[in-house]
Amino acid sequence: MTSVDICIKLSKKIRQNWFAKCLIAFFSAVLRLSHVRYGTAKKNIELCFPDMTKRDVKATIAESYENMVRTGVELLSWQHDPSLIEKMVVEREGLDIADNVYAQGKGLIIASVHMSNWELAAAFVSRRYNLLSVVRHADSDFQREFIETLRVNSGLRTVSKSEPVLKLANHLRRGGGVALLSDQHEAKGIQLPFFGHLSGTITGPAALSYLTKAPIVPAHIIRIAPFKFKFFADNVIPIPDLPRNEAIEKMTFDINHAYEKMICRAKGQWLWQHRKFRNLK
Image 1 (cartoon, one colour):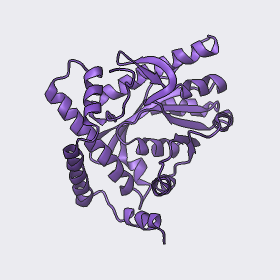
Image 2 (cartoon, one colour; image 1 turned 90 degrees about the vertical axis):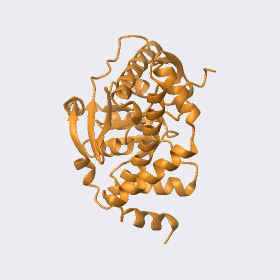
Image 3 (spheres, helix red, strand yellow; image 1 turned 135 degrees about the horizontal axis):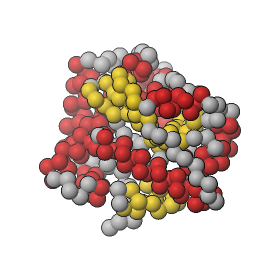
Image 4 (tube, one colour; image 1 turned 120 degrees about the vertical axis):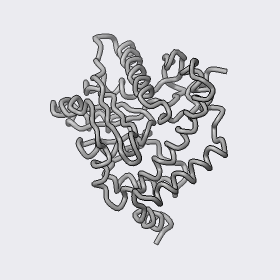
């Protein structure tokens, strides 16, 4: 039995009970005390919400730390019974938008953010649609195998971001779906405003949509109580009648605006510790 097998076996012992809550409380405290990327998170929040009080900035960072821990514990907590994924999403707003797009058979692109439990969000939509989730695999062999096993157990099918784009395009043309998290900084991306500040922006969802004509639906979840979530799907991002580069830029701008709306729904549940604004001193 490998170390990954042992960890998977242990993870299936975790339930959504007092023990899980103790794990969340302990590791959230560890993160708060260690101040992991605290300065980065503080800078990001102050740039995006300049009117936020110092007290609220501190509280938002603390909630963001807790959200990271909750995401990990929740991912482990449904390994013994993946049917919990559906049961944990207790409220759904705009789901009919994604359902209707998918039913047209032209493909579906879910554009989302590193917010709340993004692993649960991906698993939830994967159970409804024939979906491929684009991921960045961990550098460590152990982490990569362990996380991928957890995702497979959750019903996820993943594709590395280094895979040829043709694989995703063909899947969309066959009426399948693709999910991408495109809220983080991309050095080779285009500079577009995010909460009023320029940042290197991933153009993948827009480029895929322009290539295949598959509609983009911005979607995400927020945590409304321990182990309970609300799903949101927003309006389809239109494909403008413009030359390729201009169309992709306009669509990516619209996606960024949708992401801002998502974050404002639950500010403390976004991953503020990422260096989003690397061109700003």
